[in-house]
Image 1 (cartoon, rainbow, N blue to C red):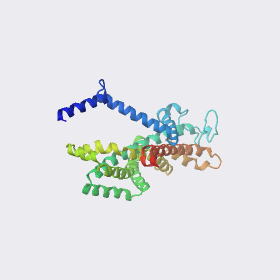
Image 2 (cartoon, rainbow, N blue to C red):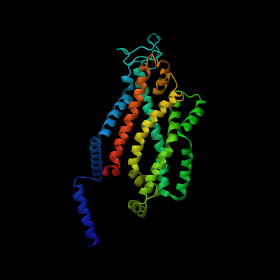
Image 3 (spheres, rainbow, N blue to C red):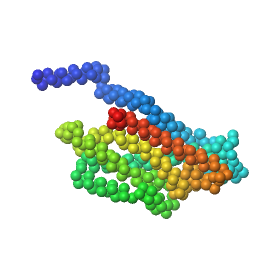
Image 4 (cartoon, rainbow, N blue to C red):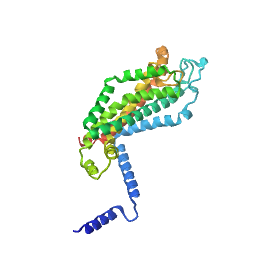
Length: 319
């Protein structure tokens, strides 16, 4: 068969596959829709992922509609209603300053979840490019990058958080900038783990045939790494990020409990738990609701992450 005949045969095959009225853009959109449909079908088949997704949906409602859901000003004190029980006016009672616990849980949840998401995004934005490029190039580049990563991992995570936050406290930042410093500390402590995970996935993908084919076609190394290898490493990174969100919520609450997170009187789950210590025996509900909010959020992301692992990891599916 001549080259002309082969080209005509390929053209007919593409025409039969794509269709007369479908452009390459439409074909790509159709494939994306099919992939989303398959992912949604697999998600519904996993009971763990479905429960986690429903719980996360509740958290998203809190994040986007917190101001509407809150019934009182979470900062305003009312000493006439100190440590009031559950009532129609205060469905979760009030704390020792007379502030509505329900409103503080809602607004504090919005702040905590947004900070956790921002910290994970920051850590992945730093760690993924470093890990992918390190695994792709290998050799001396990989050795230098991994030694730097090992240096960051040598610091205990909590110690690194405390170091950055303590230094930043000297600047006496408040509001948005205080939250930004906390997000920065969490993201900096998180990126080495992401870098090692993405490097391991890149080392496997770099040995596959499509990478060699891209090199033979003269593609740039950066494009091969970020445009070809990275999309094939997404699954473990998504799973890790989902589970890490729950861990970030715990860390933010712990730092606030220690007095190193969101400063009072701003609503925060950790600082509210600390403030409830003095009334644990007489009014335990003051601590119960912030604690339940933390448990609910962490459980939601852990369940969803476990469900995604079952869906996206083919080795578990084969078992």
